[in-house]
Length: 90
Ligand code: FES
Image (cartoon, rainbow, N blue to C red; front, side, top):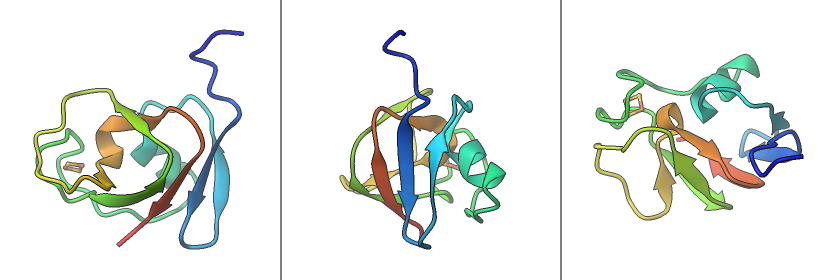
């Protein structure tokens, strides 16, 4: 088992759904696979359309986010959870 093993990372969404992040490329893709609707536009971290509140846990970015976000917000299009997270979709 490596530190990159993400099979047991749980993502809880304020819609009442939770699921395991299963090594998808980004959190946005993982949410879409669950049929959870997330606003998006660029999918590359610069438009800010996918802005989501991170209520607990932490993420790491796969590309440097350029959009302005608050300290408690993340851009699902370009990040992956590093452990269990709880998010709130707007
Ligand atoms: S979709 Fe543009 S920043 Fe995420």
